[in-house]
Length: 130
Picture 1 (tube, helix red, strand yellow):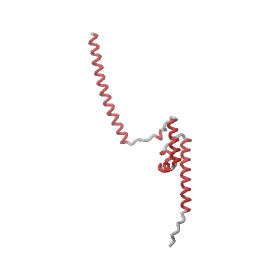
Picture 2: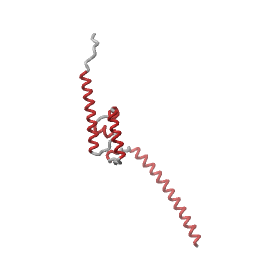
Picture 3: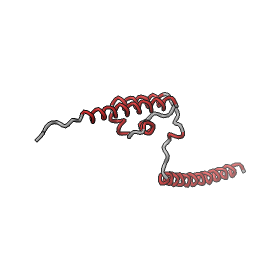
Picture 4: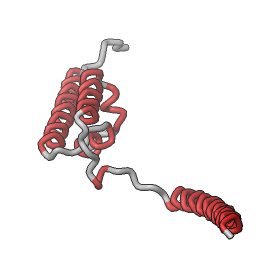
């Protein structure tokens, strides 16, 4: 029987080449996002580079670079472009709408009560004048 180690040099070389290409795509994606003045975050970089977010977290230097750029953008006060804002699901929108409707009802009741108190105060002042 032959228990020698299998020849995996070709596979190892391919894996290293794949890592280099992936890192290059990530660097190019970050450069494009910066050039287009888009928001830098893990989601945006992953989409632009066509990689999973887990890949960005796997490499410490890339993770630190994205975090640093994101912090710089936030500190500089860069506004979020409309396309990068997170969209809400219909269910979450409905919950927000219902909460706002309830708040409006409470405020309308309060306004009605305050108007009634004001009417009474005006009536009392009028009685004092006459």
